[in-house]
Length: 250
Image (cartoon, rainbow, N blue to C red):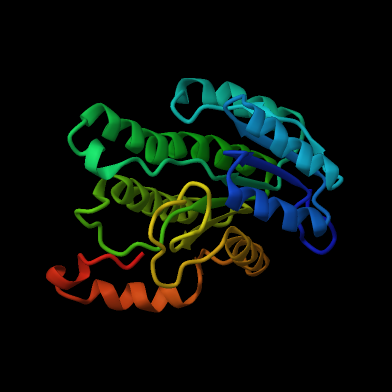
């Protein structure tokens, strides 16, 4: 359960090696979070992330989770919720793919879409309705601040656009249940995943996104942008002709 000042004490992180997720969890541990479940494919990186969180004082237990195995999600995630209430679920897994390769390799494109959209939908629904049964909780969905889908990244971006719409609808469906769904729309984030890519204007960091997430949770915001300026630039971009808006922004 949340503490007396409303800070989440138990966290489930799907994609437990995500730099954004780990930056968020570190902030929440300093705000009295005590139990963390990092979930992901078993790996040395996942165990290392868990050790780092234990060193900060959190009770931490890794969970095997594969976004591409939705048939196993209900059992796997159900075991976590069976251990006690979860205050916050952060699905933070995803892949960028390689657009130039994936658009000529349908199985690779499908894998990107299944990871970023289908796997996220499966996990989010299971967790959201588990929190509905317990009567409280927050689901933080990492989307993207990208405006229109462009030819340079349409496979990855279209999956994120679908996830964003799904999360908004899920939040509407859960109004009044005690479950808060918050969509997070970061711009270009400097991480290991984006290393080697040219940073876009208004590029940000995992730490800045984590700060936006924490602040949004305090306000029970339906959506947050990181940085905030992207909200205005993205809205303006959607008003532009397609020939202009297809140029990269983030």
